[in-house]
Amino acid sequence: MIGQTSPVATGKSSVLKRMGKAGEITVHGFRSTFRDYIAEQTDFDGAIAERALAHGLKNKAEAAYQRGRLIQKRRDMMQVYSDFAYETANDKSFTWHDR
Image (cartoon, rainbow, N blue to C red; front, side, top):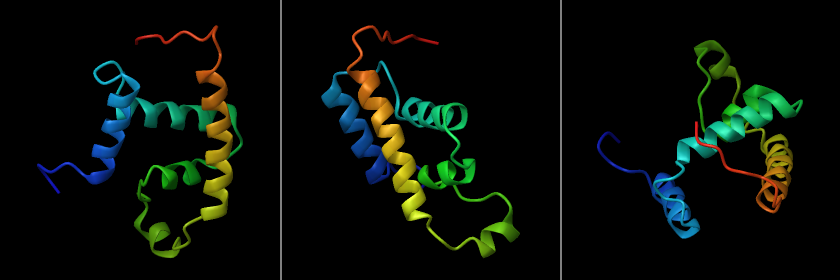
């Protein structure tokens, strides 16, 4: 898919445009924030977070045996992150910081 934009990336970019944040924040920034929050603020297994980000397993032998999709665990993790994101978005004292 080199040189093409995936429908998922296009959809995420559209969300940024509707938010009025295109050019200020990136899809990668959302993904990075999610991964950092899960690693630092929860007890969810990092492998579940990687699956939620559609990252494959680097270890080929492990990947061959890990065929489950971890749907319920991913759903639970995403609900925790959704609650965090919603609270943060509605927190008037929260300030966006550029790196």
